[in-house]
Length: 116
Image (cartoon, rainbow, N blue to C red; front, side, top):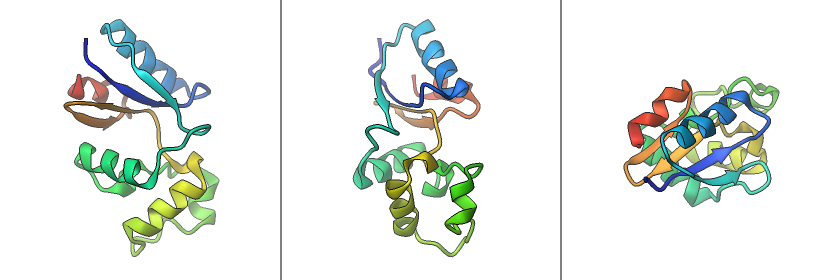
């Protein structure tokens, strides 16, 4: 069994599917409901690094707050993006699975299999 952490929103169907997929694979993850317990700045930075993608990839661009806060501006720094994500956790895309092999944003949900 692989140790995994799932950054989860139980109201999100994709996040629920990710949890189901992990359990089907025999993985009972540590579940972090990130809207109630958001990750720290350092955790978000580490997660982004572990995905191998830019921090911007962890932003939920479909949230109204994304445009309201001007986060579509490509000139914003990672620190500015982190500030927004910490102030408005709903901007953090989900689900995110972190294992010793790395981290993946589960969009599509099958991507999490890459780190199991």
